[in-house]
Length: 462
Length: 80
Image (cartoon, rainbow over the protein chains, first blue to last red):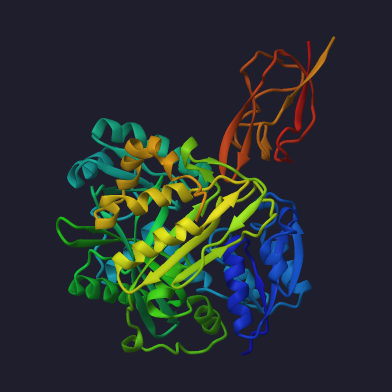
């Protein structure tokens, strides 16, 4: 490999994941860290660590100059951005390459093209993908926008062109609401993203969230099948599976092929995910957006395909042509991932940073736990609440669910409240077990079931 | 006059304004009533209002806007 010294421009469980891939490839791993992350598991595991500034992300993990300076001081020759922070910042990708380092991801130009919701929808349409009925681009506030909204039909979503992660979205149920929300949404988008541009989309009720994993080397693109992530709270994924049990083989194939077509049309390089809304009532899929990075839920794909996505993306950044052929990529069994967050589901999901007093990590056959936790660790309050991901794999969905229930019983943590009780309850729920879910399922379920969650607390005798 | 402190109920980052482009909740010299919002604490990407638990006049801020703080750390002093 030309790459020898990989700088990890991230933190938490994904930093640990990247260090593991780097070590397996024989690379020297360099972990950047804020002053609040000196004792993190990633810092403990990496070959080398370097301080990049104060605890606040804006002063450390989001500061391009601090990261480039760290890369130069540690003689890094490549940068892995992980997810979140600077992972989809086109200027960062450009700056890394301008400094003569390899960026583990697509070019800045690709990130820019796919990061803007409007240009991404245009690229998708050109590659033959259907998008949710909506505006052909940015809307101009005024009467024309109102007429277009009536033509698309209510309810509809008003979204920020520069938005992401579910932020800056409003639902308008009629024209009066639409006319009231447009100026508010534009002002909010300008404040949050520095760009007041908006677009509108029809709201598809009871849709499933299905996404396709792709890998490209700048010329060739393969897909690694799909994941379903319909269980969401406040538009944040909570539970993910692969494959999507609801899809017929024909629908699966056409969805995965359309994802490859779009990625190929932009000469995609690296690991990427194309997100779709799947309308079960009509069997139609609509392209939502493409994420130009590794995703939190990538392990379920790794479990069913046997492909190490993080290792592959580093090889691609090294200039190696894709070693996988489409016909060699097969699905074996079923995988489920639960996100274990430091949030108290019995108290409105209030964040609960604290010190880990006792910790029992699940293990055994078909169980993987990607985490930042270790006994005695003081979880800093400055970053997101993801503590770890419990992933199970088994021969089919029913056995994966039993394995998940077994693994969730084994998981035990003291000192910090987590979302484990929520997952224990979901794993027992009849609708979840039958796979009858959609993107608003979990919020409606929580309204009914939240008071009963207490009985799914920490298990005394695993 | 007795001096009292307002403590942060949570660890995280302290903000004196509701949003970067808005004015501060309270200035030094302002009087506050019980329940008045004096700042925000960001913990794990969620925002929580800090309310005064006693009344008085702000004599001093003990932390700056955007400072990292610990749970129980004094944020400001009140006279009166």
